[in-house]
Image (cartoon, rainbow, N blue to C red; front, top):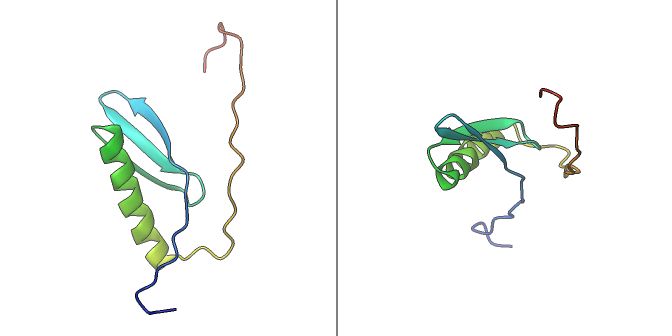
Amino acid sequence: MNHGDTFMKTFTAVLFKDDDMYVAECPEVGTVSQGVTIEEAIANLKEATELYLEEFPLEDFRRPIITTFEVPEGVRV
């Protein structure tokens, strides 16, 4: 392998709208960022995650199990 070779890991981005911003979170690492657009929020999250991993490399990379569930409509969340 050459020194220029880089192994890529795939992470998850969970996004939600908060007022006029999109908030993006990476559940594998715990990093969070935001942006005016979805694309900007993901780009900012990628940068934040890269910077975090430079300081705190993952020793045990596990993919989360992501699913959905339902609650009755009258319940306040």
